[in-house]
Image 1: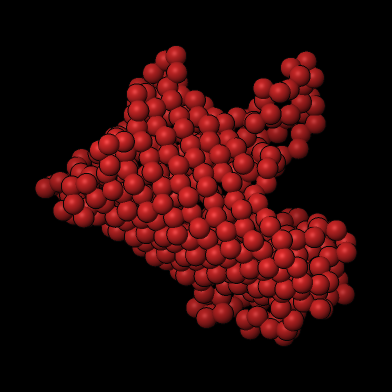
Image 2: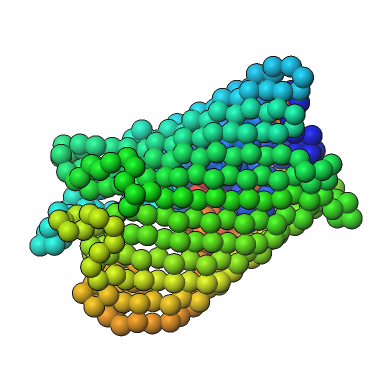
Length: 431
């Protein structure tokens, strides 16, 4: 099936090691997919489903926030699966449909609270429900080397809290719709653009789908410009997000540039991005006992009101990744890293020293304004920390399995036992 010629060549060039990427691959080699072409980019630009026809994708789950005692075991968290199916309609054109089940859209879920209370006097409240619908649906088409796509995401729970108890107050919902296009500008230049909107809601009150106080918007664009001298590409990129949730809002904008290069049996990329982030939270968002609590009380339902807390950050992110086949053609090893540095300006709310935006995790909280520098976690084993390490297995260019390896693996005492060996396993199958 014929797809965009330039992007197909790009995928082939960059895929000398692994044609299809996965979350485990991204996590292992730079923790950032802004400057690489990969199949997980379908969640950023739905037009890209036309670039990966007829294949299955999924994850066994993640093991980065699971504490397991020595001699015990448990299944990983948040497994998901899906597939893309394409139909050739002649003339090099195609139609595509895709679906993914049980995937958590963390860019929306991060605004959900841990607990919800309907009274300031009741600090316990109840656990916020866990969404159970969690569905991605895609439609795409490729006409005359222009790929277009539509995407909808729906995650919802109503009537049961996370403790498994029936409750009419328990409600969380995240809905997203977006569209994208991917097209050739010339034989050595390709561009992709996407834009979308979302609605995030939680608490005991179900509100209108098109409540203007809850609507969010986001978009991004990037260009792949082939550079023959390095056998790779120059990749400028821009993105923005203006997110609104009950009692919270966030504005983020980023501008950056990356470069990639293919070499014998391997691939390398690096990128630099500058960003601006501004968050505000109402007095009904607080930290209690290490958890985020949203107090859904009367008077806090129409946008941001009352005594507001603000956190503003400006800074940059530098990241890189490298992978190479070693020993055998079917085995690849990866390593990468990411470093964030930002200057933060915090404005405290007099009535809420324990705001969700307060950087002080102690009981003292933030009773006064402050300025400080922030960075991403150094070594907590998550996708956001500084370095990553992983392996990949390629079976006949059909089945590809990627794993993120625990960063402390080579420093452990093998006779002590305990701990995790792998934090994420992802896979794709092309048919």
